[in-house]
Length: 135
Image (cartoon, rainbow, N blue to C red; front, side, top):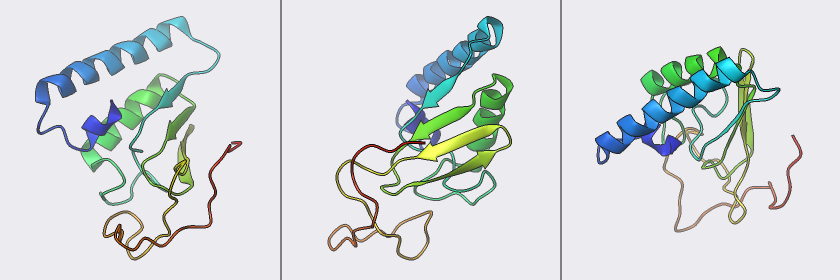
């Protein structure tokens, strides 16, 4: 799904189909006007703020800007994501991005919080814990 906004180089046709599907669903949401419109994705568009630089854990700026604009135009209120192995998140105007840590290993930030290297051979475990997260 949303991983394609990170790198679609090996699946360009699938990426185009996914983008067409998403925009169609957002258009439908604008017409049907549900009480809540939520989005779920693996890779978050951003970790803390929408104008942060590109990194391993977020989408590239072009995809991020385009999709976030479409989500806000469709009155999406919350986007739930993972991938970061830590709790994080932020706001882009009316859209909240909630990043929930992993069920397994929670990573402690080392160096650049947006990118690698994360030392997977000797990971520093973070203080976030597995289980339910109430947002």
